[in-house]
Length: 603
Image (cartoon, rainbow, N blue to C red; front, top):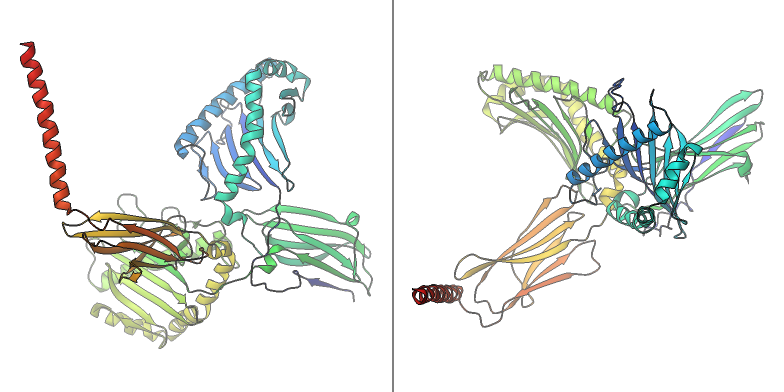
């Protein structure tokens, strides 16, 4: 019986201690707009927008705008508009929408197509290749057929349809517009690629290892079609080769296709038809840059946080749930929408779809609502506003040990917690004592909770770290600022702030003339998954020395030192203020005196 062997082979399957150098790859940057005549003809045959535009780099959609919402919706969190705000960009898109409606109406009238449904599409952008050469494109399609295109070398419009000849002649008469169009394509498009690659470096520099599957499908008699599929790889470039009995199969006999996935990964399939004989061995060899990515071990946390209330006013959700790893929220679910909304594009729930996860959350919502109602009745708290919160999860430390947590809070106070070592419930409020007896009777349920915390939580951390390895393994250098604040006549405050660093761990210390001072660092998460660390120090106004803030972080090659100091002989702050006030009074007296003298002279 012939067997098909799958070998997922990296470059010698060696885990390197450093990330391999990534060779440059080609990148594309495009705007794609579509407009129909449904609004122009008042033919509202559907609720779909009559205009929409997308902007993309490679296969990643940066934003979407449509005529229904008339606002730009970002598709990736790191995208920044070239306009001051997304509102300004949305207003500009509205102007483009109006202009393209006028263009479509003009074309319809000119070619006598005023009846029926019509569509105008515009594609504008550029491609940057590995050798730094580039191509540009600016084309119009009318009813799905090429209509007009811009030749960037000659700075002229070329008709793609005989009906478009008049339009090309009119546009080519305006040298200013054609030169501006050429300038945008040649001098602005490529720099935008570099900027977007920098903003989205976490997305573009990450490495997602593919899952490879080999299948066979009979066609007729002994002829089979073999498929080698690599799921979920990033970046797009991947090497796949079929071998027959140790010899590579000719590329002319292979069908290759690569398709993008919604989570910004790719599926690549390599297929071939062949006659299978019993002694033949077919091997699919796959190499990808992700197969050499190193992993580092640091402590991580994984938590579910759930809140349910009995308040149905103000249209706020009565139930919501979040899942997080470290300080990064993976998803949000609430009772208003009853569907899981991902907060990071790479999050996937193991062996289930987002619909499955949403249904599971809905069941948990019903359970928590019943539990809150039971508590209110049991505690005789049926009146007024009440809230029940649950925090459950685990923390994995550097040395491989871990802690677990499963705790309820009622009306903001500790109420009930699960002791994972003894597999039983403990009352943290005297009112919860009877409830612990009831819950501990069900040993099956307590063992199930213990198994969930002990045997499943930590593997979930490893799975999530693998999915989001770009986010967790990235290194962002901090931007450091030192500020000074006067607290009193004798005391000042120095604040050393490190903005935007990742990972969280950072070492900060104040020094006075090379002597370390006692201080405590406070670190807070920022919305872009980086951190802000602050180090305060109170000093004497008359210190006469030089203070310096020393920082160490994994993104820095050496210790970063930022100095702050005053001249050794400084005036007391009270004296400085007195002198300043006296100077102001003298100036005011001079001005008032001058005005009075002028008036007296006039009289």
